[in-house]
Image (tube, rainbow, N blue to C red):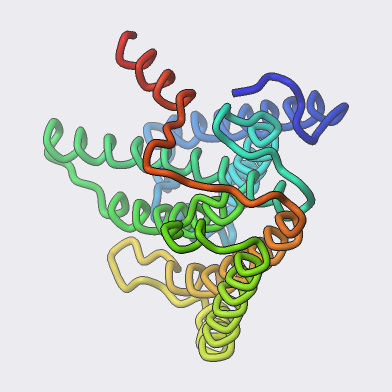
Length: 267
């Protein structure tokens, strides 16, 4: 990752402090909740963590977790990897932020599943929430990954014919691809808006023992993020319009990525 600031500039320090502050608050509340399991008769567990009504500490915990996640995403997006494209504009930056959030959520999913495995097979006390929480997180990781892939131009493209076209024909193909994506986005939002709104307003739950509101949150998120993907595609077309044509051969090798893999294996 590059250490120089990509887009935050002088705000990098304050954002880092905000991230540390939110993480510290989250950690302290978490320790208090763990301690409460041994002290209080009405201790707060995972069942109450998605039902904060009447429990101010749960609300503070959820907001601090959200703040830590967003602040960490913003801070980490200020550095990019050697094989990443630098952000060019607001929507590129937003996609980079959500990609870092997806990265953090992937690590959280691993921790959740590790906890479940240890709890189930070492202590014979399987959880009622690990599977649903993993599904919940994975849905957002999948959605954010699509947005990031669009920003990085790393989605699937077939270059065999595209590279043979003159530049004006390549631009025409890009416009057609964008129109197809916009048509898909419009159809999805048009057909799914009413259902997503209904699920959101009644905060529809999953119907399990833990009963998280996965449908009530994920369905609207799908529509929102597909719109962001479409906007990112429009931004890409504008940014790439006057660029020289790129040619992609089967001998093209990303030496930087191979060197990183080699260094990882040596360690």
